[in-house]
Length: 205
Length: 381
Image (cartoon, rainbow over all chains, first blue to last red; front, side):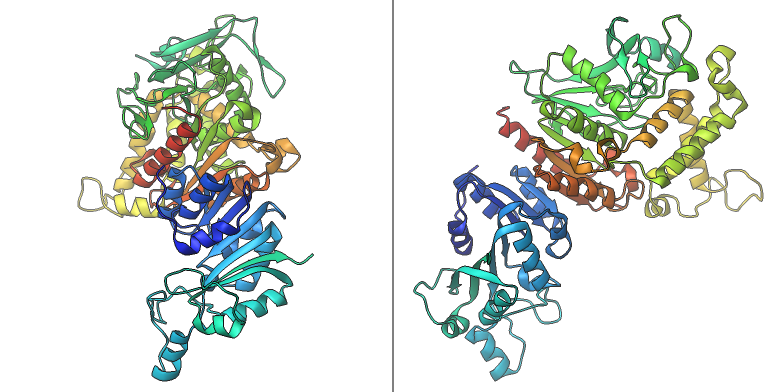
């Protein structure tokens, strides 16, 4: 299998996953990240994907992927069966984000969540200056047909992590190109400048 | 060519096992002599690592990819199995055997006992596990330790699950399609209607119709008509027939087959009795009714697969109400609970349970992808 270049946000997520880990990627799409983790990290890579096309692409890659969704299917997994549960660009589309996060940390010891930051200045500007729901390059849908029903900001996510007693092992904000903004900045800065947040959560012991 | 000769001397390969090595059945009875009729396609490689076992459904047979000797029609899964097909016989050595209890050459109620009389209803009641243990004898005979894949739909899917549960180390990958780990109450109910139709036919002669020189064609054909409805969907029936009349402009105010759907079902019934043994129908439906893999493992389906290394791909169809998606999801849930590598696809189709036998490009793509990945994981070129 030839390795296509990994999306920058996927590369960041992959850097957090330890070698040989049991991984579940929730909303794994065509399995690009999973295939990378299986190949480069020797991960036992599993996935859940809503679209039949995505599942078929994954099956053809030899990945074990189930057609399903984050809201309904995580409950079927036993406790502690994964080292990492990944949710990339999907949290905002779930019906019950809090329950999904709790389930992720029940079935996995660690959770990695990447989500669009609704606190980004461009989004704030769209609402405050134009008085319109934002339509951006990363969030191209209009309010009435978007699958994204539960937007949050980086600070909202930090608050939710605290509420469910999850430990933040590592947090990164990504710029418009999907690359980490690097140096540690205060939350307010990331919340204003980051297009995406990527959080590595663990159960607080 | 008649069914009776096909049961004894099938137009396919036959494994005849000596009377000294009977098959011990789940019921405790032992079955001998044992004969297994089978077909193979493609070539077994030197490593014997490219063998794919196809398991047939209730009324299927070993002629999966070649013309059926009784009906003269093409094999029942010709769109799936063959050169360049998803189950590619250019790459894989494909085996398909008639289940025991069947009537196409493997030992069943239409076969002869040791005393040369027909078994009839003296044939012991068999289970899915018995069918699979008999197939395992065939796989032993072919010198194959581990099958690259076991694939099947409906009752074939039940055999796939039984294989994976009984012989986990012999199944590298498993593809149960449109099936369930237990037969539902509704499905048992439909089967009972079919059996009662057969047994209500005076020509059934309490199962001794071979000796009596009769044939319960009316009963068996009604059983088939009822069952055939369950293989379709309301949408498919509507699309195919609607309320269209059969070769007439107005209803005849009689009990003729006025509607196309009636005529179609009658045709299905008539043609079925030409190729199938009524007692076989009783035994095979019974075997499906008894199937409950969780019950065999203290009520836990996960325990049926505990520690398995087999790769699974479970497939269901949206309009299949006989083996609905929920049945497949229970299998997936159990496999997840034991950490098995499992994929699951629900394919959009309005063709009902029969979808697995029909032109379904998404099923073909999934099967091809899954088998290719299994082959490359096992180093089969």
